[in-house]
Length: 357
Image (cartoon, rainbow, N blue to C red; front, side, top):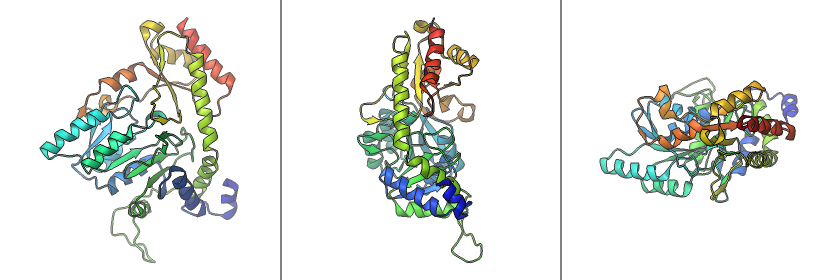
């Protein structure tokens, strides 16, 4: 597909592969519309803007996520309210959301939106979250950047709420080197996103602009790359699940090592395999293990540092925070790329065993 895009001379903005990529991904997710964009962050920004979020608004956002989830809120002059996760699935805690919305409804200060994150490829618990947002008539935006190919009760991630967002960054399960997608059932929202993402150009033969727009569209060449990988998504997800299974078996005998819980309500894509280390039981902490792996040229990383602990959001209001802070303190992401060989995985496991000894 990439060579076909070169041969067709559709290299830069838009083209037939962009149209096809949008159509194929919308079909995969089970929604009516998709808009290919330059990044997942761009998709979040447009989704929030089109949901009506503006300056001075509050938006409920998970604290346990990558910074882009809350940064997109700030782009609009709105304020992220950082909410703790549930220990049972590491995603946004519905009980905290329920309490907060009830209190805000009584005070007349409901948020402009709720943003969920499907963390490390596992869906948030959407049944209660969607019900809450519906009851209070608040738009829900699903940050599924890490979760393409995962599902919740048989329904694809990205298909919940007013809009869903995917990322095709270099570390994602499929990649266009950089890129993203906004998906939605709303034809009006998709049309609005396309308009804003192409500098909000008015329909004139000359360049005329009545609204502020953005240079957010994905190129045809990168869309061709995304299409080729989308066709092998099931194989990539299957490989990530194999990798997760390997680590679970290889590290099962080590004291003090546990894995990210797998919720019974869905099928994660196991984008990254994440472990928690109990230093007393294991004999070393998460950082000691990371440094041992680094010394033998194995890259691992701590989990997302919660946003309420980030200097950028030091003054942001929040709900809880102890759960995700504790997970961050003990958590490590292991090498999880689909191309890893069995010998690569064995080398990672052996290095971790060495730390325990």
